[in-house]
Length: 336
Image (cartoon, rainbow, N blue to C red; front, top):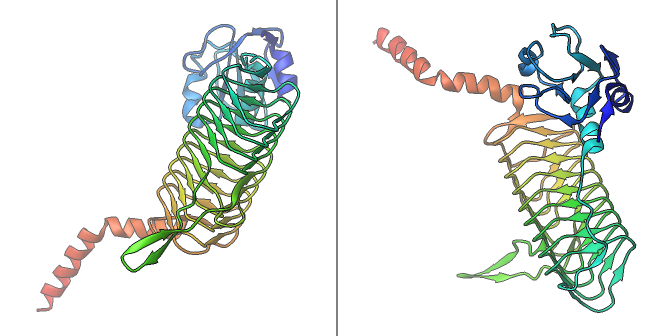
């Protein structure tokens, strides 16, 4: 695809500074971009490249910087504009419609228009697949599963019995949806397994990263609400509820029955205990441990997480403990 700078500016609601007739055929990082490429700056660390870039145009949300006469597209949010532009440029290989003859299909399959099932995928009984759904090779879809319209499931995904996948979902390779929750009852010196008879439900516009696991509810559903974005290698326990438009980075573990509110942001490698309630608009810094309920609009950090600013002030003191200890010893020795 080739677009003019003017066409791109109209698409991203931007204003052109320079020539709007330049042709753009590719999106590239600003430090390696060349003629015909468009780039962007959304992080001030990359402003140093603005004077030297070979890009034909740059999307930026601040004009108060010197350039080498590169054409600029001024927008309110350069990163959001980039996201829209990538979708416009993205070239996906069009998969065949229908069902591969190397796929095993159970009884009573309902199969929507313009959908596709790839080779060596196994589909259970009483499965419903909506329109424009793509299920790639080597997937396992259990009995009584519902997969709604416009969803893409990448290779080697497993969706267990009775799970429900909403519209416009993306599930990346290796993910497991609906595996048993970690439920065991202790009986003297052994643990008896508690059968997990619930399911997983995802609502619309959910994206699930590679090798992420979402356990089914013990009873009832593990629920992933509208617009949730999950990174790779996340563990979500049984009966967890994740609120709308919450984003979670990789290597996070959430124990069972915890409820996470809307519009939360959870950094990588966090551990969240079970049966907690985390409010709306909460931000949890990476490598934090959460062991208690969190109210709305909090930003927390720490191995046993608490208010982020308090944690940072405490950490400054913690780093000075050897020095402070030495001074205290000197004071004590002075009065001996």
